[in-house]
Image 1 (spheres, one colour):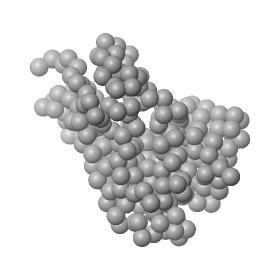
Image 2 (spheres, rainbow, N blue to C red):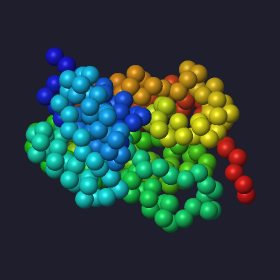
Image 3 (cartoon, one colour):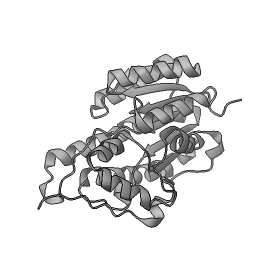
Length: 263
C-alpha cells in the first residue's frame, strides 16, 4: 500500500517548481492532491499531469494565497469535493524585491507577510477542525535559508519565512494532542525564484552552487519532495516542530550571498 493512500493533500503554489515536485510525489504516494495555484495555466497543466501520468485524483483550484477569502475557499472546496484535508503544504510565494533594507517600503513588507506568513496561518486555521476531527493531520511549511542565514536584500522574504517557522513550532506544540504534526523544511532547489535569480545573476548563481557541499542545487521532485512525503506520512508520526534543511548541506557552509546593488 502506498504511504498516502486515502489521504487528501493540499499544496499551494503547486503549478511550478517545488510545489509541482511536491504535488507529483504526493500523488505517487497515493494521495488525492489539490493543486492550489494562482496561475491558471501552470495549475491546470500540473493537475493534468497528475491525472494523466500518475492516475491521481486531482482538484485544481485557482488560489491567490494573499487573499484570505481564497484561502478559506481552498480548504472548504477541498473538503467538499475530496472529503477532507489531511496534509497541508504551504509552499506558495508571491515574489519579492531585491533591494537594500533602507529602501524597502511598507507595501513590500506587508506583501511579504501576507503571502509568506498570513496565507499559511489562514490555511492552517481552516484545516485544523478537519484534522482534529480525524485525529490525524500533517502540516509542512516551506521556509528558507534566506531567513536562517539573513541573506542580503530580501528582508520581506527573510522575515516572513522566519515568522512562518515560529508559527510552525507553535502549531506543533498546541496541536500535537490532536494527532497533528507540523514541520518546516528549508530547501535549496531549482525553484521558480531560483531560476529567475540565476537568469539575472548567472555568475553569482554559479558561485553559490559551488559552495554547496554536494555541488548542485536540488531537484524539486527528486530531492525535496521525498522529504515532504516523509513528513506527510505515518512514518513521521513522532516528528513535529522541526526544521529540516533539505539543501545538500548548504546550511553547514553558510552562503556568501552578496549581489551588487547601488548605494
